[in-house]
Image (cartoon, rainbow, N blue to C red):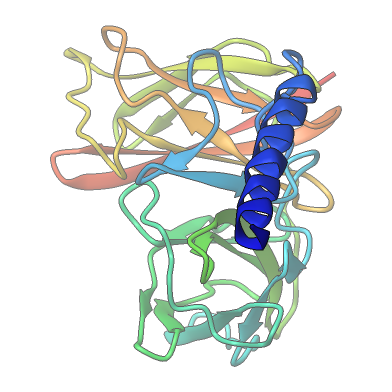
Length: 295
């Protein structure tokens, strides 16, 4: 008899719980809510980042990135920041997490797990490098700073945490090359330039706080240049802000519209920016640089 009462009580509790659950369903996500993406903006149709099917948080996307050695719980720790001008050296560094552990898991983005951008503080001497990582998480890459001055190095990567969560981060650190520093003035704004016989131009006017498509064309005397894929697209674009050297996230479209290569740029505010377009023809990567003023 006692056993029957216990069993009957359990059945009644289950039924009551089911009924209350139907009367009080779990809260749903409002239709106006945006999926978690770190406040990162994307061009129309691209949606949030997903690398290998995993959602990616974007650190520091409200403004320019690369302004600090630490962001989103990750820290850039170089072994040395001094490089004699004109002398071949090697830059070695680690990316460490909040527990000071060297990060060893990175997602491959634009065909590489790590992109290193180096430029002098007057926005000259641009270099786009791809370090290699040792098993202990130490990255290394040959580096020559051709002129004296203070240089900025940006590590652009997507770290993979222990739980599989991916975070896209750009960290920056100053490098020093001793000697007389003679900064060069920023070239005047222009929408066209020439590089090794190629004419490179773009159409559109960047606007503060808006995602704007920049349509680039690369031409030779014979017409459109036979562009080849480089880093997963038909070009790679980096934009840096004059003054604090803030690093802008620029999104390429993987395909082309005829001879047009499109990138989506969001300028966080007014000012002057320097854009660097890497493109590849016949296996050779060249860089076209532009100054743009955002009103």
